Length: 412
Ligand code: SAJ
Image 1 (cartoon, rainbow, N blue to C red):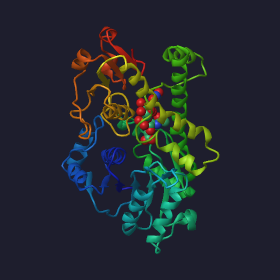
Image 2 (cartoon, rainbow, N blue to C red; image 1 turned 60 degrees about the horizontal axis):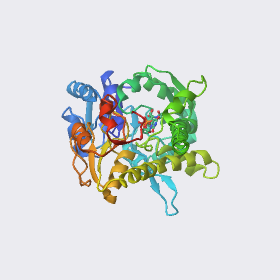
Image 3 (cartoon, rainbow, N blue to C red; image 1 turned 45 degrees about the horizontal axis):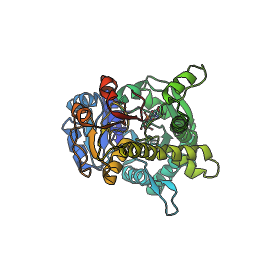
Image 4 (cartoon, rainbow, N blue to C red; image 1 turned 30 degrees about the vertical axis):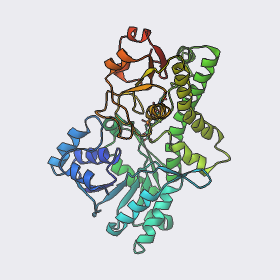
């Protein structure tokens, strides 16, 4: 049924998906607007960091099963995995930016043929799949689409949100259950057939709007839970209680599972997706909105703690441990740790030593040097734990005893 699959958008989701499908023997055409990414992939290399992805990509490019291009070509199925960031509206609201989906729809429309399947994988606000179908229909009046022709449509369309955890993408792409939201039963049926070629988890069928909301709900659930933990951490500081011990105790209850407080919530998913629900239902999504505000406020709370500690010194040396948005990855995008370090540098409250074992150099705009963990511990008066990287967790805690420590991740 699917000899050729085209994946539109070769980023953190699209590239691993393309590589896994290609490794199942199908011909995969990866499409990306970024010529450099296309060239890198065609050379058998990768332009993103994800464990083992380089090996899989090298293999499928070598066998000819994966090929990248900037111009869409004919295929049996198209999987759209492009970014869906938010933009701030004039009145300050967070609006989903569907322009990448629109551009992808317009790019593939000319090569669509009767019998094709188009899947939207990008995390999207409710209604985005229907909107994509409108863009496709506008571009191809010679074909029929599910919004008009239902099960008999020439083109089948479904939303199947990606749900993989960065760092574990190759495993989770195969083992996770998939929510398959077709615009009609025939759309879902066809989409299930595609996912069954590489997914070992269960493929559960629903409609496209529910599938969109399911993905937003998963990430909002996590955001709300972390906001609860972050609120507890601030309450506990005030009441002189160790929040980590508290959560550990509460979680001993068989029906309680509180996540970990931290310096804020980063990444491109959990800090973004809840806003799509808030934007759709601003009057109703009260808890979801408050969770976003609580988590976004947490970096400023940590900064305040650092400033308070710094006041005790003339010009303290402050070691900031970790810059990535979470443990054991190198991804600095939307990172609360990086945000905190940038603010400390800006406020010039001391000498800042940034430690990030997973990167080779700091972003250029940050006018400080990357320091090794050992050097930073030697020199610092104040040590701030911003990310619970394995290197920090495994360190001899005696080293920290001589310092003023602000541990936003509870590793000490
Ligand atoms: N964090 C905490 N405390 C915790 C857990 C996480 O502060 O107890 C912070 C992390 O440090 C990080 C942020 O939250 O800054 C997000 O990290 P994460 O590991 O929770 O999630 P992501 O963004 O790496 O991936 C999430 C996953 N969603 C869920 O677990 C429900 C992943 O499965 C999704 O595929 C991904 O979002 C996505 O693409 O939407």
